[in-house]
Image 1 (cartoon, rainbow, N blue to C red):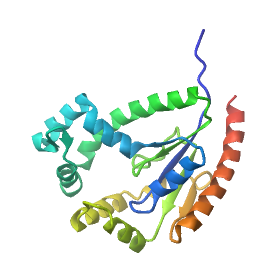
Image 2: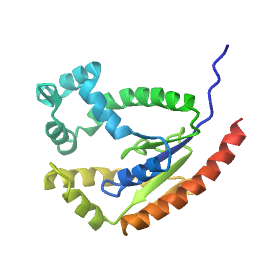
Image 3: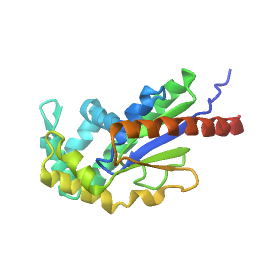
Image 4: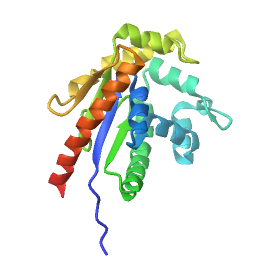
Length: 215
């Protein structure tokens, strides 16, 4: 019997570094929507995928790992401060795409009709064709910098390099004004939660309509 591909409505969650993407993603997950954290998946693969590990060592040297552990500080220095982000992404992204496809298939088989994907660089190569709606989380630069300064193990030099790199990509230009939503996160966590709850209801309705058209 031929396998039937089940229709899925895909959301993307992204925004500038420090804007609150992960907080929004956590709220969405609490409301019952499966969320795939692409950045966490990438880190897990870099740590545990032997083939990817060998590629990273070949490209960036033995210092990319300390024993069995990924040397995040070294790679961040090489990638963001050394202008080699593209080289690292070229190794990691194919493995991430393969793993995400596998996870999406599993989730669809469980009967879920909506999947959200969170990633800082979701729009790096333009708007993904397989994403139906994108939630762009936005905060003022001052608020983002303040949030980032509280993260452990993040130096001011690293922080500045990451903000500069991401800002230079002008990712928001790839948003579709007719489909995508900008979520402003400049107020309290309670205000953000309320916005997300309202947004979920809106997007669920739009997904129902979209999935009906695909059947």
